[in-house]
Image (cartoon, rainbow, N blue to C red; front, top):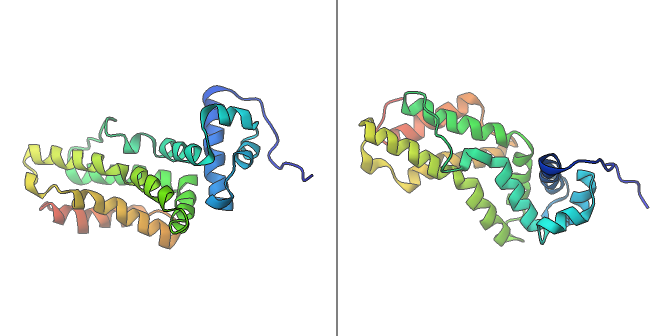
Length: 200
């Protein structure tokens, strides 16, 4: 029997939970969704399978939790919004927060999920809902700008709010990494702000 390259370590609580989440994303990126197992995740996390099964019925549910955890407050509609004093700065801050997360294990996991979209469309649908979770926060920032009188309220549409996350995901898929600061600024300046009638 091959030796486990990820030796067991004694951890509890949030430390163990984060190790499990990281292991799930790493396993997905390395092996693909079709090979994702509770045993593989447990081995990589350096724990047994029982802690996993006590919390999640399957690797799919664990993976979705890991993605939600990785995105964290960036996609939480109730989390405090950035307040830089202007719409451009607020949007750029949101996108930079998301890009920083995508630069970690989540980015590679996203590419793996998108690659499995034909074989596992139900997973892609569930993950897509999480990835586009940035949308409500972009809407909230735009609506706040509309209240200030910076942009017309009727220019805040679902399509406008989804544009930046969609462009970031396409960039991650094609380039294998999230957009850089200058590319994020171009998304804001050349796409989002003109769409809502605001000057950069």
